[in-house]
Length: 328
Ligand SMILES: Cc1cc2nc3c(=O)[nH]c(=O)nc-3n(C[C@H](O)[C@H](O)[C@H](O)COP(=O)(O)O)c2cc1C
Image (tube, helix red, strand yellow):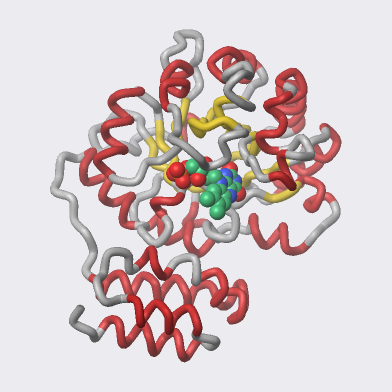
């Protein structure tokens, strides 16, 4: 049971989980491991196409490879037909993650436009039948990550969450935006709260969207009563946000790593990437992280420019050394 994996996560003894929300080309296995070390209770891989998995596309298998220390870990798939989703789920099952997550939330045109991701929210009966087919095809627990609706005028998740539960999923994660909203506006947590407060919903409900501090995490946990919260963008380059969340849940003072510690996390992250992704790709992926690792440091701009322009591992390590030895 997936719920067994969620026990004893919260320092106060209640069942509440902090999850690193999956982000394509960001939450690679190396970063997921870092976030688990800093307090994330659970992680989910970047999404991969069911179609690519059944066509044996090597890059997709690299994306869903995980390390034992990531557990509990879910592998996330997207797709738009029963045949591809079922076969992909069966292949994923062989990799023995703790659960399989179906992405019914991605709003990107190349995915949602083809009826995968949040595109499925335009056809709820199909969403339900595909979800049920995946649940029936595998022994592993299946979860769903989705959005609140296709658009403002569509049927909202609070109206069909029971049907999703009846499909046999064991966890529901909801990003409080519609598909049409993409990432604009604010996440609407009232819809998430309605699902959580539905007496007939027995599976854990996790909320997601715009949680950017330990304080906000605590406020939304208390206000909406969710069983867990996924944190995405705010955790990029800030793995210690999970420790800060744990500290506030534990009624401890919130601490922030020193600049030297942040530079060390960044260095370890970069070095861990190279064996798996190669030097060039690691340098490209790390560019998404620098301004986040060193956010808020005055006079950091020249270092950031050097990091963005660096072309070799040696150059990057040298700049990180320099950052560690500079009194900002
Ligand atoms: C660059 C980027 C890539 C993302 N990739 C995925 C993905 O692969 N799978 C997924 O379920 N959500 C993906 N998301 C959505 C996030 O997991 C999350 O639901 C969303 O960012 C809202 O949470 P936040 O406000 O905490 O960032 C992605 C978001 C971003 C910004």
